Image 1: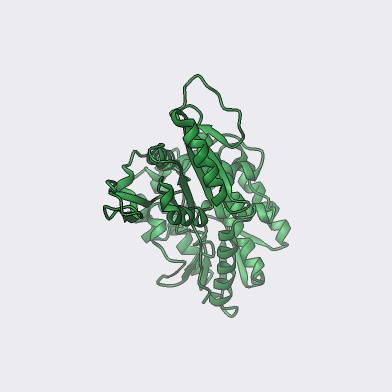
Image 2: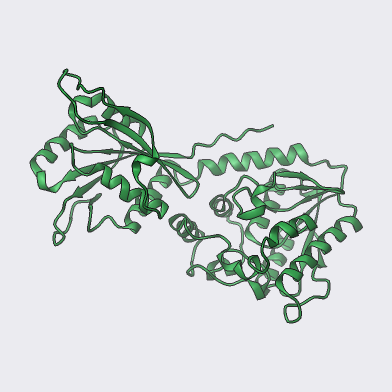
Length: 411
């Protein structure tokens, strides 16, 4: 079996002379990335404590010489290496710089000459092509910066700037294509080849949403499209734009898509959202039994919210197997895959819709976009928003609704 190995840590070395504001900067950065005010001490790992003496044998009153501080940002682990300020600890400073993808130098405006000397010292340690930014601390509010890659700590290093730095860093590290995407794509194709039995009745439930598009394309990439029937659940409350993209894929794949009614005659005027979803669950189960489907490919992900995230990529049910080739994809992976293969997508995604369901219970929750790249950038820079912000009317209709519905067969 293909084993996924992902490198999901971004290392940032924070350097500067003693008492220049490195810890304060890290505190601010953690707050920007996580949205929470957290004492960096609580996030410290691999702390190097002072033994009471510096390397020359002189008294050293500091408690901590240097430490690694970790936080999570949108599926990535960010490691801040809080490098020591004293030059005698050059080995630890070099260790932090060499391990990091990004080096941030904290320059104390109140000690310009000392900071400039220390800056020259740091430049000698920087490997060639290392990504580097300079941050001014204790900077007068009325002063403006003109240097490239240089921000004023209190006045210019805002949330958007810092997130933009991190986003650009990830793009550069991944050489404009997600290393992670390469891994999850290869894993998905491997799992498809391992688990699809061509002698059985395999089916994919195709909704026209972004996950569904990727799942169908992965089946084609694995050379298994002829081993699948394609079923399209229709409620009668589908967006016209969704129906349009489904028709486009039927033409592109030159394959018959079988549509079936999953509303069981219910509607949003007389019935609740929960009752509609319950009807869909029953309709799905009924179709699987009537068509003697052995394996159904449905697109749920480990990164999904709530009960969906508790599933495994392959789940054995009473009379069939559920399988999701996109299980280890994140939302960003899905969009990068769409970008990589220039897959047509429903136009509603460019009109503020982040997740698509029935028109009565789905609404826009993002700005309008012109490109897939803009969508990816927005998702990356807004980690505290939810993929299902536009589906709250459905998700919150009944407490623990999804838990009950999944047991009944809701996808």
